[in-house]
Image 1 (cartoon, helix red, strand yellow):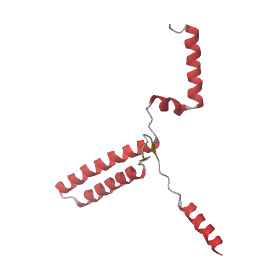
Image 2 (cartoon, helix red, strand yellow; image 1 turned 45 degrees about the horizontal axis):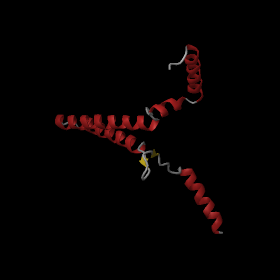
Image 3 (cartoon, one colour; image 1 turned 180 degrees about the vertical axis):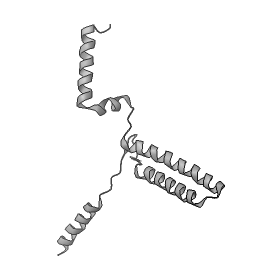
Image 4 (cartoon, helix red, strand yellow; image 1 turned 45 degrees about the vertical axis):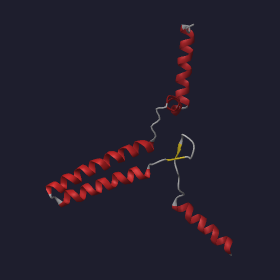
Length: 118
């Protein structure tokens, strides 16, 4: 049994309101989630491959400045990939981003430990 026109209209309004309240919900439910980290990692892979191609080209052309620039480009791509990797939790299908404490948190922790030692 199909939905009436009124029910379809109410359902569409509910979906629109839900999209405004939580825009990530639709992508989460449909499984088409692209986070900033995955986009940056994909950009890093592309940059790394472009740098490698340019590096090989510079080696063939025997051009040192282009080779140095290509090496730096591939290094930037590798850094982008490594800084945006996610580590999977053991035994689960979901991946969690491992977040390291910042340098200020480390300094604060050292300061607190210094005060406790006295």
